[in-house]
Image (tube, rainbow, N blue to C red):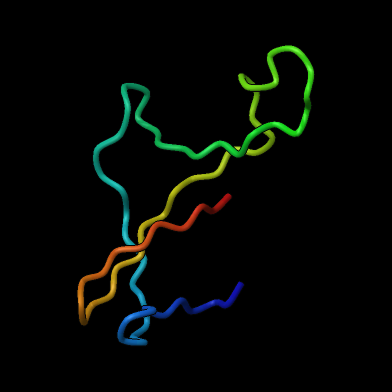
Length: 68
């Protein structure tokens, strides 16, 4: 993945931001589905990632990237 993300609309470098507003535990996360087909496979996650917002300073488009 490139070090510098760019806006798909105007090709400007995106600025990394901090998420505000979270769940009761204070964290927001994205879970990829488990690859296990066994019992309770839908409950477990194969990987937990944190969504990180990036904003274009030109057009204000906001993109969320799932990062570790």
